[in-house]
Length: 77
Image (tube, rainbow, N blue to C red; front, side, top):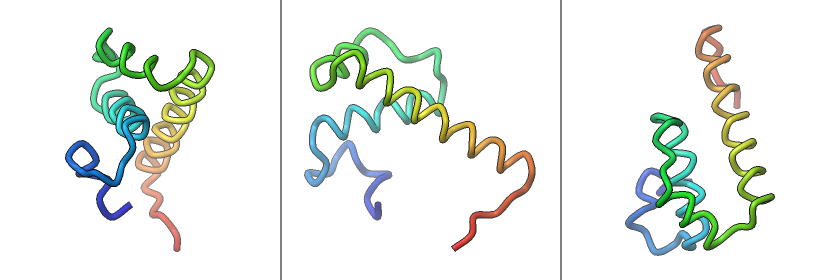
């Protein structure tokens, strides 16, 4: 977790983890920018069902973040 922001340049993330994190980052920045190249990268590591599960989990956690931000909720320890 300490190096999550640097996932693209780190060797301690597997290629499949990097592409999943790239999807999460892209969905957070602009979900309309999930392009064909990223889909191709995803398909080289995951099957269609796994990609759907990844996108659903990412979307759910983005929802939680936005919901908590809107209500001004702080994370607890």
